[in-house]
Length: 125
Image: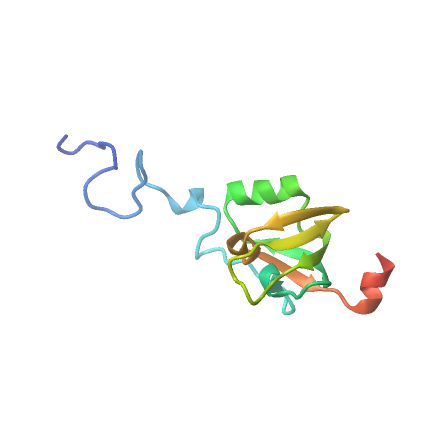
């Protein structure tokens, strides 16, 4: 198809999707709109077991963010790390969210940013 779209978009150009070009406005996060994290925010995968934390941001795509919301992990929610074996990086992170223990893969846990709570804040909740 000369000059047509074809299966993988036009020949040449940038940002081609399967059915046509992918414009920056359609992408969830772009370079033009960086996400500002608080200074104390760390990825969930770095927290040791027994730590309570507050979810600050989920920097993932629409499907992964929706799945986190279905599990009860949303910005502002309080979570507790039940098990995080840092010696074996292929094991999932076990997290308690509102009384339910959820297993989260390492890749997804690296996109969930949290603020660790102090001992006094963890005892109140």
